[in-house]
Length: 419
Image 1 (cartoon, helix red, strand yellow):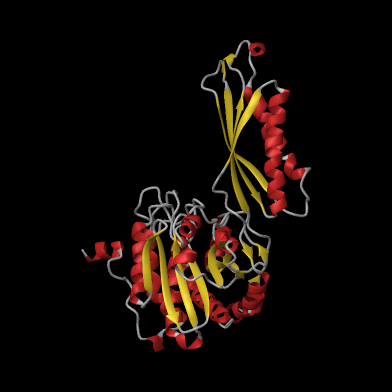
Image 2 (tube, helix red, strand yellow; image 1 turned 180 degrees about the horizontal axis):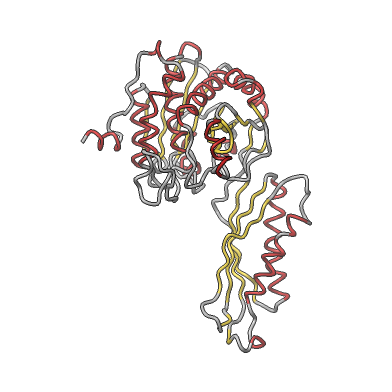
């Protein structure tokens, strides 16, 4: 019965020692049961009821004013500590439709669902940051807002919370921070970029309309398969020949469906694309180019105009505010050492943390190395290091939390000094 109540989040898992004994490492150790419980019971996007309940319960115990079921299974927790800046820290809550293959003793018990992206670590880390900031409340003044955001993997959770009135019903933050697990780097490495950090992500569905018939008489048809195949290849010239080569962009065709039988030329063929860009002008020109090429190829084949559908929930690029990056870089250097705070090419993944920045909130997301050196050496002996979203990825939780908690807490304290 107690285990069931813990899973449901009806009372917190963590029993905190006294504040004077709470170093970041001590807090991290206390959070391992929370992390393992989250990992064991992942929930898909828009289904994060128990995860949100656990997160909310832990924050209520720490004295936060907590609102649940906001914009779906979103959680908003507020701690007021006098007059000052308002700083928002965000974690995502959802897991992925992946069957876990880690062999961990606390592996997912939910069939076909896994925290393969490190969101379980994000949640545990933010609870630890909440504890750390509560214990260090003499070092900052202002309003701390923590949000547990649903449906990041679907790209819709941030938008749902904003549409529900996140910045109207609660104080609009002066700054927003988030971190993300990095499955390729060792614990103690932090990646902090200035400017674009993740990509604009657009999904495109294109149905090319031919005229079907018997495979033995192609002259009586307009075959959509070679027409669509030509489009698949032609789309790549939008990257190689129409875009400035100094900036990255990606078009990948993830799905191609057409036909039902060997000797039937179908009426249509449908492809699904993902488009990744960083600059607004690249996004605009590539999306316009996709439409232009699809229509031109259809016309060249004497076919009807294609049906082209652009995703309504396209995710914009995370843009790290340069002035905030400049402020927090030396703070992170104090935590892990200046040589361990690095910059690199932006990720071509999508992240809807970007939506808060688009609402005018100066925002920064940094990534946290999550593998011990020992594990990295073992992986290199046997093959490649598992990436996030892999069925075999999992963070070295204690070591990662021991870095992630002071990293995020210290940067938050720095930003509270703004007023």
